[in-house]
Image 1 (cartoon, rainbow, N blue to C red):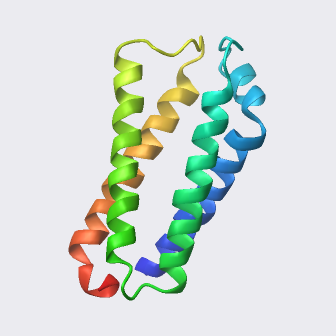
Image 2: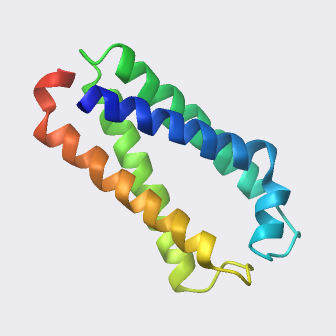
Length: 127
């Protein structure tokens, strides 16, 4: 079940990451944000695709001896989520429609908590 959840998170990360990587202008339009600098969205998409998709897929395929990678992914997810929350609290987003921003934050928060949970509770799977 844990491995299946990693597969699901990996595929979710692929979809989310590719969306930001290749279609950042679409996200800007949907959220009614300013199109001043969408490069940060593309950068986040690359990070999500590279680290979360590829990293979690690697752990799904070969969970043994993946504890260090899972820890790195978890810490990175926490840092990214914290940055999103900080930016939202201090109104750093130019978006007028904040629902998708909030949805992104809630999704990232759930993923971060889940990754920390499984890395602690099911540590034996990844050692």
